[in-house]
Image 1: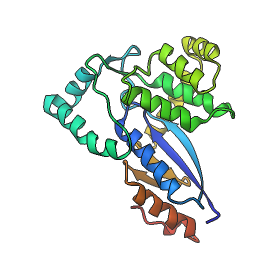
Image 2: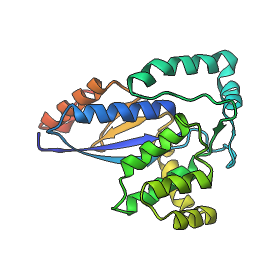
Image 3: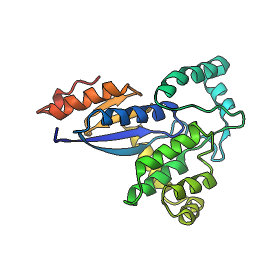
Image 4: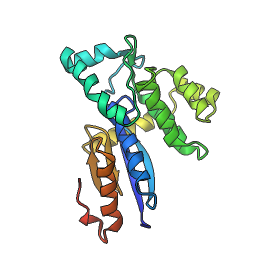
Length: 222
């Protein structure tokens, strides 16, 4: 396999299925060591109207899914989460964040070639879903940025000033204008979309079809 597979992952760091989907994508790539892949992160906000300071996560889920639905969601996530090495936290004081600043941090990391952007994404997912931190909080983001190798002081200053928020909002609006309404969404070579946190084998099969196709239109979406 010599063709490069370009994968765009449209996701929101507050989305548990996006975290599961990313872990499964990593497995799929590992299953195809001879495949040349390039991953590009695309921002999306499931709740762009979330207050910048966040709100109670349990209250947010109850309002969104109802009492029973919120409980069912936590139970539904346990098995696939465990399969991907994720133990989802459920702290009573955890906040549902506004993820705009987290996406801005990722935007800056794409410019800095010394930063492992996939590692940064993993840190943001883990902070929210495993540690129950508020990834809308600039202090939390500054610490994560520093751990990822970014200049913490510069990041904190730019976050406070709202630098590049308009650019990231524009990217989010572009995805919405293209019809994206749920995430994760995998866009392969700019042509084919796979929606949802599919198993690694399913993603790997899609890569095989595309890598061996003489014409990309022969790809069958899983």
